[in-house]
Structures are given as C-alpha cells and as structure tokens.
Image (tube, rainbow, N blue to C red):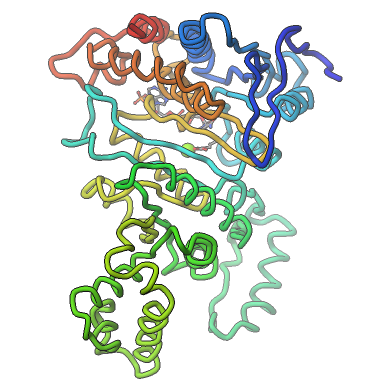
Amino acid sequence: MYEKITPPTTGAKITFKNGEPIVPDNPIIPFIRGDGTGIDIWPATEKVLDAAVTTAYKGKRKISWFKVYAGDEACDLYGTYQYLPQDTLTAIKEYGVAIKGPLTTPVGGGIRSLNVALRQIFDLYACVRPCRYYAGTPSPHKNPEKLDVIVYRENTEDIYLGIEWKQGSEIGNRLIKILNEELIPATPEHGKKQIPLDAGIGIKPISVSGSKRLVRRAIKHALTLPKDKQQVTLVHKGNIMKYTEGAFRDWGYEVATAEFRQESVTERESWILGNREKNPNISSEENARMIDPGFDALTPEKKAQIVKEVETVLNSIWASHGNGKWQEKIMVNDRIADSIFQQIQTRPDEYSILATMNLNGDYLSDAAAAIVGGLGMGPGANIGDSCAVFEATHGTAPKHAGLDKINPGSVILSGVMMLEYMGWQEAADLIKKGLSAAIANGEVTYDLARMIEPPVKPLKCSEFADAIIKHFG
Ligand SMILES: NC(=O)C1=CN([C@@H]2O[C@H](COP(=O)(O)OP(=O)(O)OC[C@H]3O[C@@H](n4cnc5c(N)ncnc54)[C@H](OP(=O)(O)O)[C@@H]3O)[C@@H](O)[C@H]2O)C=CC1
Ligand SMILES: O=C(O)CCC(=O)C(=O)O
Ligand SMILES: [Mg+2]
C-alpha cells in the first residue's frame, strides 16, 4: 500500500460518523514535520503532546505517531519535485486526523501551495484559527486580553483555487479578448470597461455551497460558546465585489435565518425588535427610519422595501424573538473587511467568531494573532467532514530555521486543538496550563522575550517545550 513509509505496528484508526471523529485510545496520527523551522518546532511539539497524554492518562491512552513526508523532506526521500507523495495522501486519508508543520510556497512561480493542496484534496473546508490571549504574553496592544476571536475561514475556494493565467500567456490573452469583445459588452452594468491587454488574470469563485457549509459550521461552533460569545460576524468586501463577497454575506444570513431560525437573530432584526420593545406603538415607517440612517434620502421604492422588511420581521419572529427573547439568541451580523481590521483593534471585545472567505481570513488570522502576541501564538485547524489536519497560522520562517530558536507555541496549540477535537480534553488542559504558567513566569522564546519589559533571556525552542511540561504541575 505504501511505497516508502511503514505505519506504526501498534495503534488503531480514527474513523468518522456524521462528520465527528471516533477516536480509539491508541490512535495512529500521521505528522508532517514541515520545512524551515518545522525542523525545530516538530520535535518540541511531539515531546509536549506525548508528555501531556502520558501525564493525563497514565498509559491508558497514547498516540502512535506516523511520520509522513511533504515539502523538501519529501523530495529528499521520494525524488525531485515529489513534494506531496501519494504515500502521504494515502496515510492522511486512511487515518483521518493529521498534524503538520509549515510548508514553503515560492512566490511568483514554481509549485503551488502544498498547504492549500492538502486542504482542497481532503475538502477541509473550514480553517479554524482561534486568537486568544495567554496572561503575561507581551503584546503591542494595551488590552490584548480583550481579543478572544475565532477566525472561521473558508478553505477551499476563492482565489486560492489557484485558477489564474500568467500575463502574456496564450490562454490568458484569449480570455481577455473574449471578455473584452464579447462578455463585458454583453453585460450592460459593466459599461465600457475593458481589461488591460497586459494583465494577468485570476478567477475568484465563491459558491453557495462553499459559503453555506462554512457559515453553518461557524454557527454550530458559536452555539457551544458561553452566552456572551454566541455571535458570528460575516466578514466580506461586498460593497466592491457584490456577486462574490456580497453574496457570501447574503448566503451567510440565509443559513442563519433558514437553518437556525429559532437559535439566531440578525443584527438588523435585533434593531427592529428592539425599536418595537422601546415603543410598542412605533409605526413601521418610523422603525424603518431608525434602522436605516439614510432613510429620508431614499427613493420611494427603496423606502417601501425597508418598511416591508420591518413588517416581515415583526410578523415572522416577534412571537419567538420579541420582548427581549432575541437577546438569548446567537447574534449574526456582518462587517466590511477593511473595517473589521480596525474593529478588532479598537473594539476587540465586541467580536467572537469571524466567518470569512479564504483571502480575508488569511490576512485577518495573522493580524489577530499579532494582537495576542504574534505568529508564535497562532494555532489552527483545517476541518472537513471526514478528515482534519491541524497546523499553525504561520509559515516556515526560514531565517530562523535550524537555530532551535523559534516559538513552537502555535504548533503546540494546534496540537491542543487536535486533542480537543479528539475529546482528550484533560491532556489539552494540561498543555494550556503549562504554557500559561511558562509565559506568566517569563520563560519564553525570543519573539516574546524581545517585547517583555524589563527584558528576559529568551529560551530556546526546545527549552520552551521543557518549560511547558515542567509547569503541568
Ligand atoms: N500553512 C503553512 O504552511 C504556511 C506556509 N507559509 C509559507 O512559509 C514561507 C515563509 O513565509 P513568511 O511570509 O516568511 O511568513 P512566516 O509566517 O513564515 O514568517 C514571518 C515572520 O513571522 C514571525 N514568525 C513566524 N512564525 C513564528 C513562530 N513560530 N514564532 C515566532 N515568530 C514567528 C517571524 O518574525 P520575526 O522574524 O520578526 O521574528 C517570521 O520571520 C512562505 O513560503 C509561505 O508561503 C506561510 C504561511 C502559512
Ligand atoms: O500555503 C502557503 O504557503 C501560505 C498559506 C497561508 O498563508 C495560510 O494558510 O495562512
Ligand atoms: Mg497566512
């Protein structure tokens, strides 16, 4: 079955039922070490995960690690250009849950991202990146503890589908010609616009199914959070890209109101209900004026539309959501993408789950990680219905590779997410406890040490792993 790798002789497979993992006490878990700093981070991560499982379960549970190859290491073993060997894909498919270090992607040419390929091959449609603060972590922000968000990023489409044509290529030129001469003129709303003849072209598909399954998962996750965090914000640039980003917003609201009607309220609905609660005799038109600040300047058709919206909401959900009942529901709102970047800095505590398309989520997860201490503190998971691959938000950080210096925190915390996903909460809690105590004690790697006042001596990557284990307590 495998060409160059052999699974561990002990251990059992994780299987899936209705999208949920069924985990034996001795699961076989494939891991990819990763390029660049993966060489430093993986041994530290494995050591911490194993120590936590041993301490928590005293031998009753154990992970059997299965080394599989991707990136530079794979080329060394399998030959030139064998960046993602079939062995690796077979192992991940067979064992269902895997963890990986970062993999290099060249800019401008060369291979396409192996990280993105894994997400697409296994249909890992939700990229889940929690950004929360561990006490004592130095941060460029005054109140980093106020940020506690989970970026829920669509993981398989958008421009990451990778369908693009190089400037000057034959097909690219043909496409531009067809667009300029046939398709754009046939679309009146595009007027006399033309694509520059010297452009490269990329395609940005955003589908109903891709958007809805992501938002569905985000809402289900929100339902498991404490009441004050039960909120999903749909992030989009729908004012500019109406039929992709704007549609993502609309489909997100459709999921909330059609599939989670009893559990959710949209922000606009909450305003309409709230206006009626404050003034039981309020007219529909007055209510419409209050939810839309520009109401008086609108055309009569637009005004009528908003009045109708008010009446529809009151007729359909006043009984189930009115008189303050909406305050017990999951709030679904939306924010324009550029605005959310400033909102998570200026009003961090107003947000919880941020549901995004692929590119916006990529940017936003790095930005949110920076607020709580940087990319060394940014874990993540790529989740599908029959497979999950855990990996950090950051990349290979090549300038720090092989120095035993980098912060392994993000991959270790990705391991914590994996343990939680497996239902091994006791082991996950031990690691969070050990990591919190190490940080609070100033035992940190260079990235955090350089921000601490007065300065502390940085630990090596491997020493940080040891400090976490020491603080299991
Ligand atoms: N999922 C994946 O595997 C990903 C892969 N990549 C790939 O990684 C490669 C390098 O990308 P690049 O843009 O340099 O981004 P990186 O995330 O690799 O690194 C950028 C900088 O972030 C800081 N950083 C990153 N990781 C850590 C960490 N664990 N601890 C502390 N600081 C950290 C370092 O800053 P400083 O030097 O200031 O300390 C580093 O120089 C590219 O090929 C890219 O495509 C990128 C993202 C995700
Ligand atoms: O695959 C890559 O090289 C980059 C991916 C990335 O930045 C991410 O997933 O956050
Ligand atoms: Mg990224």
